[in-house]
Image (cartoon, rainbow, N blue to C red; front, top):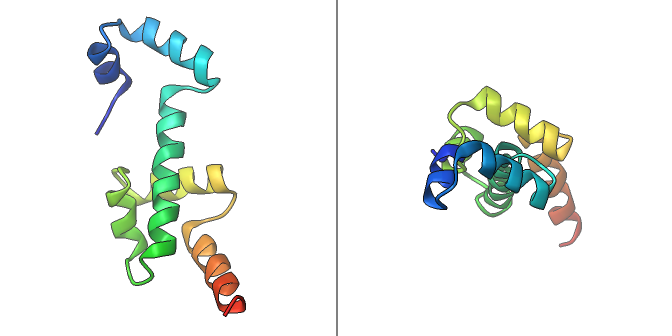
Length: 96
């Protein structure tokens, strides 16, 4: 688990100042940015680890529950993790 408060403390800023600074630089909130990083890692795991369950990837990528993982994944990628896996499995089979 990582929070904006933890990061703000690590860089010696209060949480409000850190949040304003982060949003001005990255044009998104710290939480959204962190979710994008975690979903990106989950995508990598889905592509590399063919036999790993989505539930395991959810927790490995830093999400605390499956429903939030699925919601964030769909919000960021426009598809569910299983749709992502199927789509890329079809592509890799077509390239052989």
